[in-house]
Length: 119
Length: 119
Image 1 (cartoon, rainbow over the protein chains, first blue to last red):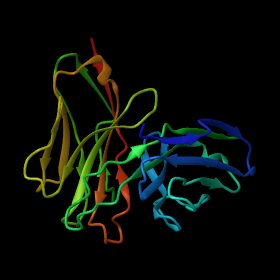
Image 2 (cartoon, chains in turn yellow, red):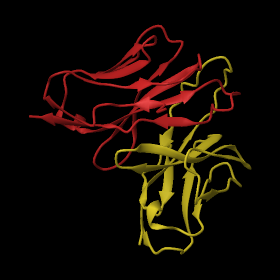
Image 3 (cartoon, each protein chain N blue to C red):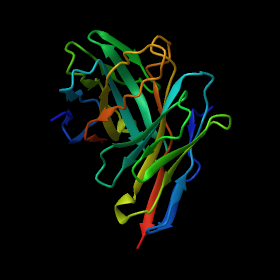
Image 4 (cartoon, chains in turn green, orange):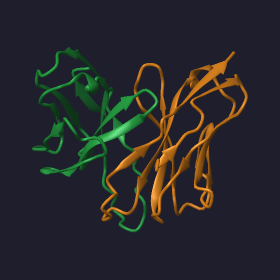
């Protein structure tokens, strides 16, 4: 079954304690991305990756790190979590388009979400 | 400026009636893709429908259709014959540009519209 998995699904932690949220996809997608969802703000992109060892910042990268050492995995790292990082986090993946002159029709496949609370 | 604007934080619709969820977007690119996602109370993100900027016809997927008005930069979602299971949060999203564009890899989401279907 094609899917994006995230772990953990729920996490309560304290300020300053480093944590990692894992993301894995089994669809051989080149593109992977992390989002946070906050009430009234929708989803905002944190980081994305075009392929192994290629990552770049989204709109809200402060306080987060990522790595892409394998195509299937894209972990999100919070080195020193703070309460303002309490949020619902989604990992997503998609193909990169094969036809350069057309917009990509490929939607993103989302993981189930990780609800993080930082006390 | 907001890339995606959804002006209806919440809406009610009677079961079996049609409903339109508004979405306007802001881009200077000629090539872009527009997406709608559904997020039920369980939290997962479900892809509904896609419209490419070069598509001349409005996209349709079952009971979902996208009213695409390019000159007005609007991409409204129309749900026909609403069902109780349609009660959810709905997000409009955009991916700009062609794959070589510097901003291609970013997805932008609106703040969402919470739809409640009344029996």
